[in-house]
Length: 281
Image 1 (tube, rainbow, N blue to C red):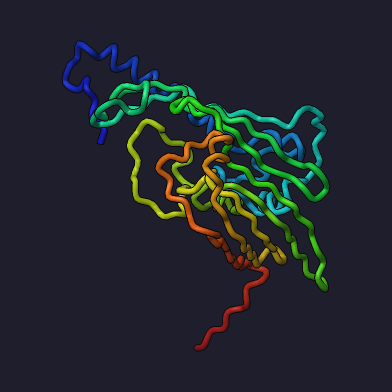
Image 2 (cartoon, rainbow, N blue to C red; image 1 turned 180 degrees about the vertical axis):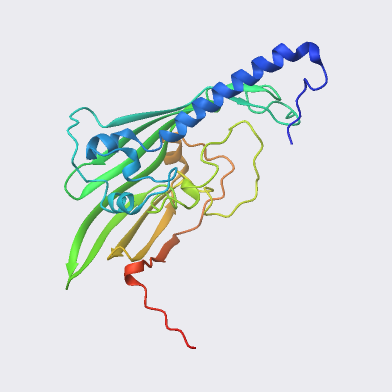
């Protein structure tokens, strides 16, 4: 629950209205940042609007899944400029019910903080007929440093198997679940954009972004007839020096030992492939 410090004081009504207007503007800016996740470099590459791949925020529809599984290589657009896109999370305002002793973060007060939260640069798309990528680098305006962010590099190729189509490939990435072809598990899940100055739960599962950008992984995958999906691979931790070189602060990490396996299996049933129901009287 968030309580207004202005409640019950009518003399401060103009200030309250001003704060309401500012917050409404921030929400509008936030909505624009969310739409930016459908990064325009892919729209320019394919010649398709963002809604062709996304029918809900971040989640991928069948067309979007095939684009991602195919290594981000689909063409169709006439863009000849550099393959870059930018996303801004700014300005942001964070209010918590209770102030945080010592400040919400270095250089910030205990409460009611404005911040230039993040600025991300995206690149990638098609490199060759079978090779493409999604690559993101982010400046953290709270920690005041630039670091690599989500990266997913893929080699993919469709194979015909006696009338069946297998879209197979290999992905190497730095964040378990960023390669998810439905964009519905931790790397892409709610809250899509959250404050870096608000307290967050300290307990979470390892797959829930605990090791994001601290690992390097590789996995092989196959999608048969748009129905059956199988992926299997593993991750190894990056050394502290490598993380520092990439802008990641390794302090306080609990690195995994050896190789951590990763897999996903999914079976999609459509009306065309459902068996007819039989009823008994």
